[in-house]
Length: 221
Image (cartoon, rainbow, N blue to C red; front, side):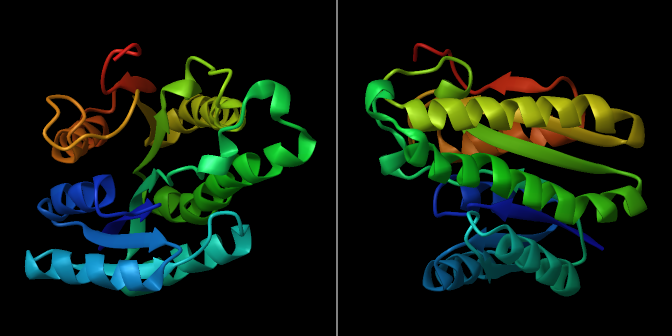
């Protein structure tokens, strides 16, 4: 039995992805900092017949994140799909000339150290399965740096490079690594950026396994 682990699970995209993969028979591990929010999401999904459990962890604490994913395997089975999609803090988005060395610690911990910790925790299980999918979800500054959002621009670029390296290295092992870039805000009712539309796109990326970088919308949207 296998599951999808959604790191950075929330009531928008996280729940939509949980519903989409849950309909395909996946157990769902929701990983986020707030245990109360996780309980509410698990309850919502359970009412819709989705087998889900919450695991509290802070992505800026690699050992804590790894421990949450280890517990997810114990409870739900091997992580076959990992989605890394925590929403950055607003204080990461400072103008470039106001961004000093210490201002980059948080964004790098959030987007790089956390991502690496999550991948290294689930990769052995994927290798044992002989298959797996790793999905990184980022904003538009992962592709076009923004002078007013220096922290996320720098950290997303590093996360993108890490993901691309994984894509090239793991393909030979049957493990697909891909990135979804979502320019602007996730918007309910939007033709391309509604959570359910994005969840369908992520399901297609897992199913079709073509290419590394995918775009939810035009970069200037």
